Length: 69
Image (cartoon, rainbow, N blue to C red; front, top):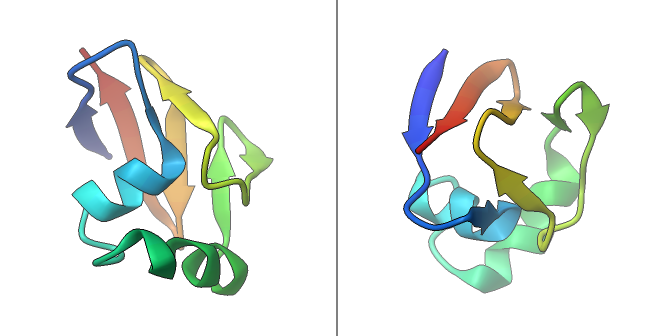
């Protein structure tokens, strides 16, 4: 599991995907979400504006992330 540090109160899923180098621009986020399986706290997620908070767990194609402060 990879720990990802959140600088503010939360980060959106789209911002995370750019920060973690899954996509290079905001325009690529929607396509990425359509083509990949993403789970936030055990539930399938496909909204790029979904807020991710400290202690949330995200799984992208089997790779797990834990969000920390």
